[in-house]
Length: 95
Image (tube, rainbow, N blue to C red):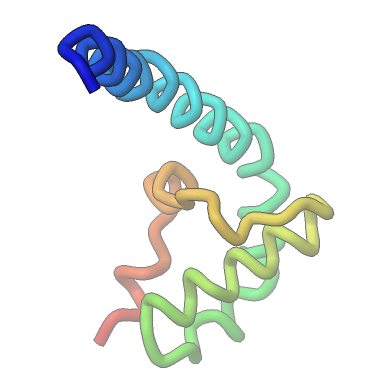
């Protein structure tokens, strides 16, 4: 491997970090915020059940399941941070 190959590798890594990751993050945030009203309506309906969960992690897992049921899409790997920023039940459940 020579210096040109290393330079190309570092440029590729830099482009990924500077361009691809922010675009992917923004796309996921938009997806979450677009679905948020429907998801939060269902979360609100199930609030008594959700408040009985023992941990914030259990709550987050249950909200992922609700999001999947409501939207029909997988939410297993999405960062739900933007959704919880709108309404953070995890703070209520943590003990």
